[in-house]
Image (cartoon, rainbow, N blue to C red; front, top):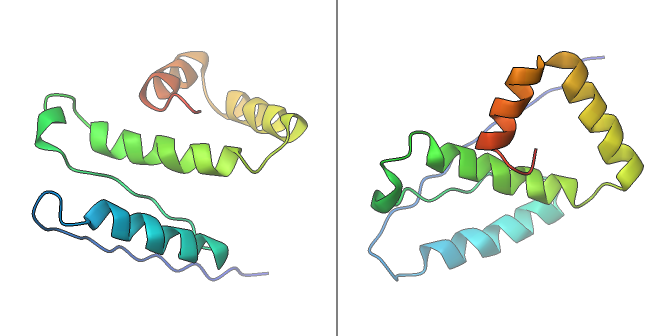
Length: 101
C-alpha cells in the first residue's frame, strides 16, 4: 500500500509587532484540526550564536504537540523504539537539542 505524502512550506516576514506570530498560530490551529502537522519557528537575531537553535526549537514544539496526544503506555513504546534505533550517545545528543524527545 503506497502512502502519498505532500510537504509544503510557507515563510512569513514582516516588521516586529505586526502580528506574524498570531497569524501563524491561528492558521496552525485550523490546519491541525484538518489533520495537518505544523512546524513553526522564529528566526530571531538574538539566538544566532546557538547553531541550529531555530530548527531544534521548531522540532521541540512540534514534538510537544504530538506527545500531548499520547498516553503513558504509548509514549513508553515510542521511547523504546527510539532507544532501539539509536546508540546511547546519539539519544543523549538528540535529547539535549530537542528536550521533549
